[in-house]
Length: 277
Image 1 (cartoon, rainbow, N blue to C red):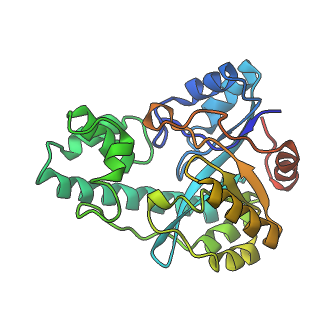
Image 2: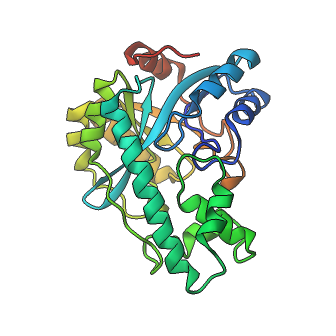
């Protein structure tokens, strides 16, 4: 069984609609797909309808923005009930991301041909306006050629245009995911090119809060990182997942380039409050 539980749509920062995502998953042979847009569940209904029609098994989820000691943590949440205690994080993150994006655009506008209106036009139906849309606006202006190039330069955390933002502690978010019947998984915990990673010591508190597993096999993890994360997961008894983190044409990641084992999926289904579609 081919299982890819981390993918994004135009509802957040992907370039495929939920319908297109599901159909592409079927086309490349993905049996079980996870829809995990950033800080929103707005794509669930459309993706569910198409998944039933196309015969693709769908796991509903989201990727929640967190921060610990000023370092970003992305927490995947699967099969949770969209309860107020959890959706509050989505609403706060959406507002914070939007204001942060506007500040970054203001910074960039001093040196590059970009406006807030350009970014909103690029974002379109997205519920979460953020850095990927800024990157796309700079590409559309002919300044850069790819999102990777933009993120490696003017949108990198070390650059003068970058704006830091406040996000909830992942331990709080993990507890809220569990309270909503969801299953929390730490996404790409050692993706160093995204910025400073969280120290290994932070795992203990997240495990105590209810962390289920970690993404081990991910494009942004080197073989050495894979080995290190695997060892940490073994130490704490965490489940190991592999996924694409697919964003459509926004990133080179391809659906199904990494897989999660069927036994891990079964545990997610057992612990989650919602069924898979």
